Amino acid sequence: SPEDFVYQFKGMCYFTNGTERVRLVTRHIYNREEYARFDSDVGVYRAVTPQGRPVAEYWNSQKEVLERTRAELDTVCRHNYEVGYRGILQRRVEPTVTISPSRTEA
Image (cartoon, rainbow, N blue to C red; front, side, top):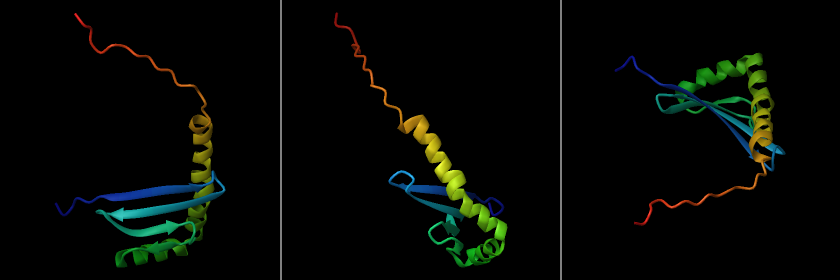
């Protein structure tokens, strides 16, 4: 119905050679249409659709919003990489395998 809508936020971190090169892309989506995005390589919000232009302009005019979003490269991306690296990527456990018959022959 017309009063139903879906808003999505997607934050994606891209890593090259560990954390040597990190890129953050955030996407703002309304009813399956991306209208604005932030790309850390660009450093500001960009409109993807005409409807996203006033939103991107507003966010770019807010110094604290831009500072917080730019900082997420470290506070979110690099932080989560380090947590994941310690918890998952550094695991060097030899796998074990157990083989059992799936049925018995009579």
